[in-house]
Length: 128
Image (cartoon, rainbow, N blue to C red):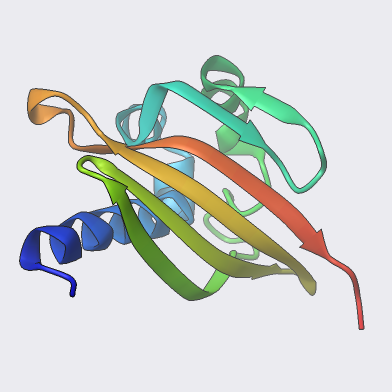
């Protein structure tokens, strides 16, 4: 049975993930920094490994970051509380006809830090 604290943790992680898909947030270095854990790593759908510094430097120029451009469409987002302060999200995205399955781990920061993206992986879904 899911309790209210578990629901709140999952909701906070989902909110953070959806914010990171918003072009305005992706283009705002201070907001992107606030939502990424300092120990963040990613294995992108391209296969590239990203560090915290690399992602924050590149994010404003990556797909889905232009205010007037195409956006990522997220679907089937689900979350599971792995441990206190640790949420695993799974979902799919569609971007310009390309689908990817995604997995994120969100970690609750100390004090006022809030929930931050600790790890992300994207896996392309083959056409058909």
